[in-house]
Length: 221
Image (cartoon, rainbow, N blue to C red; front, side, top):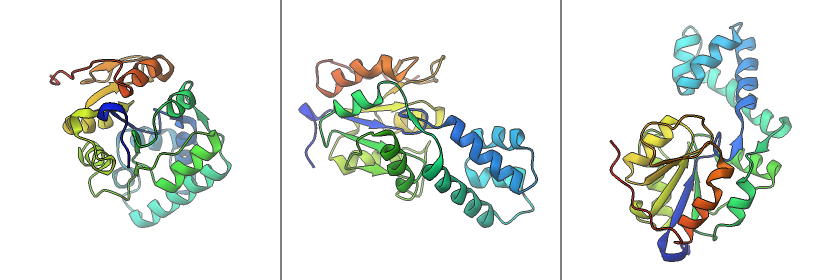
């Protein structure tokens, strides 16, 4: 796969970074909670902080976690088919502006759902998608971002990670990559640059990818 100019690469998180799926996630978890007779708001607050299996252990310890996960997956797949999705402002311009082979998606979701959401929002799909099934260790482990870099033929130091969440930021930093945060009023701890919105970050990301900007990532504190 051919890399971008001068070996610059951009690795994107998906939910919360390129796709605005917050209301979808809340709706899915709300429906899941109703099926188990649980308080939807309480379940969602736990789900925001933990991975699904950890969420089940906290809110439905008396239930079979495999059954809980199967129900969640069923609801998430249905949401991809029938839910309303929106890409963040600037996402389409950004992804269409990047050279093929110079960018990838790194998500804690599953590839078929990402493809479904990108189809619904008319976003281009890259050749490399590292999803939850591709790695044994998810974010905040560095493994997902390192796997994406390897698939692109990139060195970690040539990669820019775009993230919105603390676990993803830690993952990128631990992989030895430059990490910029987007779509948050307050910067996530450790990011090298922060943008309140993806739209604000677009010209800077494109400049990095085309080597129009010289950027050396300082060591995270």
